[in-house]
Image (cartoon, rainbow, N blue to C red; front, side, top):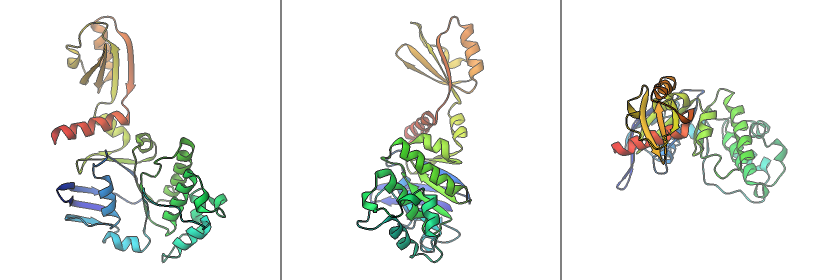
Length: 293
């Protein structure tokens, strides 16, 4: 799968501004971005639902629509209604029959974790169960690549864990997974690689750990105890200083050196050292891009 200089506009809005990326077979990739950043447009181009104004998008060496038609790509989009008066097995069987080399229905139900729901009506399932049915439908064509657009939106914690267990079973078979999500902890836990898109451009590409290190690997927090924050930005390893009330938060590449230097300044109160989270990395990356824009 590859994007080469992909540009897409909708009227005066430029949704994508020259996206370049390549995803290899077997990768599980998370696509992160704020609302309006370009995630949905990227997915639409990938699925052949729309075409780039400039540049090129390819799947398996050809146009996306050809791979979708051949069943090499499965998709689970945000929007979709339950089909009334049909069972889970009937729905997945019908969809599988539209493809030239479908996955056996029993296997799709097993991978989606809904084999026990096969005889239930789709329109009488819970939200989490319905989401897993949609996953089974996406698997029906036996795709080599599956695209999941906000797959756990509106699911409770238990349903989210069940869904990702199903997705991991599929990924372990050597298939490629691309998913977008607003739950950053999901990206950190389940993706081999994370892409951050902002302003229609890819602004970061790497593992969760790489993205955290890129914006400063750790946070050192301490109480100022009435003294100012002047000079803290000059301490070893410190990239930035943020003051919230009477507490300072230092983003640092070398927390040990930062803490030793702080100790040299006098008593330290309320010291806390923690690795940067993916949430903090995401906010820093997108804020940085927003300032540049």
